[in-house]
Length: 107
Image 1 (cartoon, helix red, strand yellow):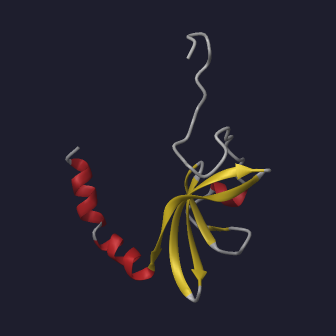
Image 2: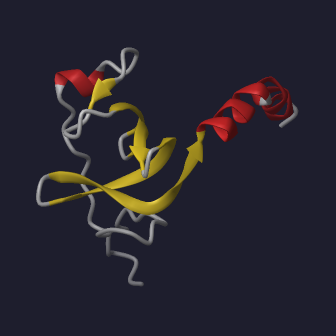
């Protein structure tokens, strides 16, 4: 790569265009404490400019979906990178959160 060429920001995501620009957040998305509703009426919280947590129902089961999103044609679309946890797994994650926080402190 030539020295005078600017480095472009890239994502390690395998699920969306590489020339991402952060989407502007609406007033409901900006305040994450209350859990704004997405277009489908599902509660969601932004973790970062392109990562969010959504609670949704799929095939009569409730999931907590933690996923990376990308922008296409002005819309935020879900990428492949992420995890959907069923409620028992979500509760288990919450149960071990103190232990995880303690492990983080060791770094």
